[in-house]
Structure formats: C-alpha cells, structure tokens
Image 1: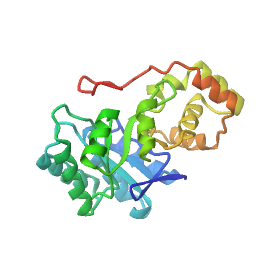
Image 2: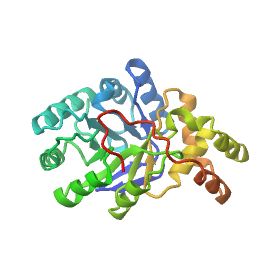
Image 3: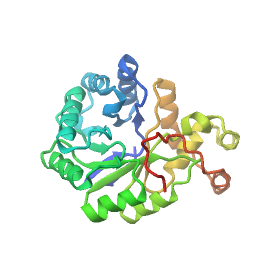
Length: 272
C-alpha cells in the first residue's frame, strides 16, 4: 500500500479507524484488517478500546516494524503530568513499547502549547513515540503550534470528506508539507447512498463508499481512516484503491455542497 512520509515516519494512506468499536468486536476487526493487509491502525484513549487493539496486536504475527499504530490524548489531560499518565496507560493497554504517532485529540481553550509539545517531544526523544501531531486544529492553532512553538507536527487529523470543504486548513498544512489524516471519510454514512456517488460508482462498478474513499485518496497529502468492523467492509475499502476516477467524476463531486460537518462537539474550536 502507498504511504506518505512525514517527520521521518511512513504512514499507509489507508488505515483502519476504530471509533465506537469495543471489546471482542474491536479485537476481531483489528485482527481481520491486518490479515487483509492493513498496516495502519488508529485508536485513542477516549475510544476505550486500546486494550482490545492491544490484544489483537499481540495475536497477530506481522512484525511490529511493519505496523503503524496511532493513539491520542484527550483534551482534559493536556497538562504535562497528565499527558505522561495517559501515555503510559495507552502503552500498557496496547501492549507496546512504543507507538508510531501520538496525537492531541482535541484542542483545549486553556491549553499551554509550549508545555504540551515540550512533553510530547520528551516522549519522542525517549523513543516511546516515533512522531507527534494533532487532531482538530484550526489554521490559527496550527500556526501557533508550528510557527510560535516550533512543534514538529507530523499530521493534523480532521474530519474531511466530499461534503466538507477543508481548503483553508489543507492549504496551510500543504505549505508546511504536513499531511491530513481524514476521519469520518464517508460523512457518517451520508456518502454511502448519496445519489451522485452512487451514479459515479455505477460507471466504475464500484460502491458509492468506494468512490468517496478514492476521491479522498486522490487528494495530495491526504490519508484516510474509515471505520470498518466487518471483513467485507474492510475488503471493500481496500478495493477502493483500484477505482480510477476521471475528470467528469471529479467535476461532479466538486459540485456537491461542501458544508456538511458531522463532528462538532460543544468543546470544539471555532472552525475556520
């Protein structure tokens, strides 16, 4: 699978998201995904499934060095000591000596970016995470972290799909050669039956979901982490890599409304 290189690590372009997967369902999903060929697994402390992911990783025979594992610290744990406690718990639950990428899950209004990234840099220097990054950061927050603090951000994980314009944040990240990791890539299912996507899919003998994923992965500097618990869905997402969209398809998708934000909790920042 194609990968993107950022801050010295390589991240497979298509990964497995595990949000809202728990227990045996999550363990089984991670095991089947890796068996199918996935090498990028995304989890978070907040998901409550790191132990299940860790059990799956312990059960598979793929060398650790061939896997990319991301996890995240929640926004109420951004004091230096709290970050360390959360990170230690994550490693223990994942049964790993290190993770490949450790992210700030959401920004907090009162966070101290200097202290946060100093702590994350220490974890990286200790070899416990190979790279660090953020999720849900706006252009203003990215500018503060990158230009004022000098944080070596490997990615910004954000909601991104064919129904949501993310041009401002993507343009800023591109200017810094930082990739986007797209979560909610199917707009929480809205794209799986969208008439325009269905029509394009018919032309390519593909599903609407495959068209939506292919469109995302055709964007420069974009990775995607669709959630898929069933083997059939995991394979279908992999098969999206075989779809070849043409200029007419891209024009049709570009014409869709781009204001459908699915994830905006009350603690979210003021979006760009």
